[in-house]
Image (cartoon, rainbow, N blue to C red; front, top):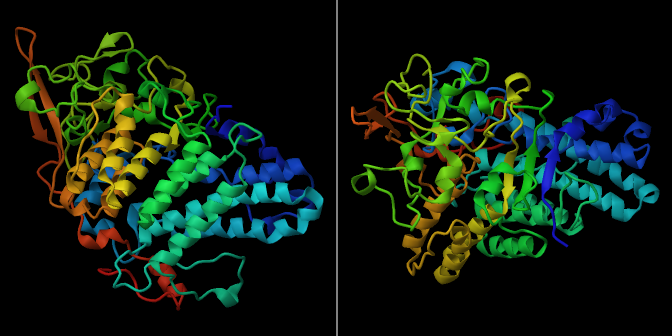
Length: 548
């Protein structure tokens, strides 16, 4: 039987709010009779922990202010600091990250609040084994341990330091509910931190069902897929490979058509998809910030800003349909014809068909780009492209109720890319190519035949950038590869200026879109500062990360 994906449905969650347990408040706020009164109450309580995934998906914030790919080189915001978009100020001003905390990525208090709530569940659950049975308690515990793993994983990604010379490169580990006497706690080591993440995920993989009893609940394939991601960050290559294989064993699979993956939440490839609703209760604003501005008159003059656009760094990385690398010298007269399928599924470009019209991104066209400045916000895309991946063509309900397109949290294609990278790191480049080629074959691209690890890794990095574009992996990939200094520091990103000639043809000019500024990513950004407030509060915390 084919295993379906995890569709985290917040419509379902909203309908359960009357149960008084879905708010994920500490269990001490309720009597045990309320939280553990019957199986449905516990089930609703556990499902409430899934809100974590909504809060940490890319499109969760109302103004698209948490879009991590816009802190990298693949998406560019046209706002200097409007709409609560701090992307450009963060990347162009050193003061954005400081010893006070991790700036846009600050999450210390939130993560430990979630961790405490998880620990409260673990404290109480053993009391009810006799009432609900060990199998049911283990299944519920598996779900909550998955969420706790995500919390520690986030902490390790933001604050963890993998420098072997830095003895305590992890974070404080709190695996039970603790009182004031346990306030002071040192950081763990890098390896100890990832041990906690992987142990929780392994418990989840062991006790989660292959086929969840209800839509939207975690299953084994999702847990093994997340192990592959966590082990990649932990640099435990063999564990990445084994987890990816287990994910496939329990239902992980690629969809035949990439367009299906990004248009259909229930596509089996979407191991975890965060759903939103079209009734205005659980929504986001991707249409407001991604749609081409020419849609304004066609959607009741609805406010459409269109100010987050794909960069040329991303767009030019999509190959031609036959696998030839794109370059402007060879293909510049007709740059958008004959590209690979992911380009057409992800990018809105000049001359493409969109809803009932042809997109006009040339100067004077109704979708034309606007020049970015460091004082205001553009009136449309700053790059000459719009991002298609989180908006639904022909959809109009967002005009009154907000956007409801689902968000990607974990896809099987990522699991395969994780595996391919780990195989290369283990020295098995031929096997790595075979795994990578599964992703390429899906979009009819020729397979890689690298024999050299460095050549393969260059291809793997490009593949991750285009396959997972906009899904929140690029910024973190650059950090874990220690390549953010090369890709970001002292660099600018680019877009395209388009001019329509009198004969109807177009000329394209690649231009910098960072307003004559350069971006900042010094080496200390690889491990952000532990919050100053925590360092003052926890006297055993120990040394801060270097550079802060």
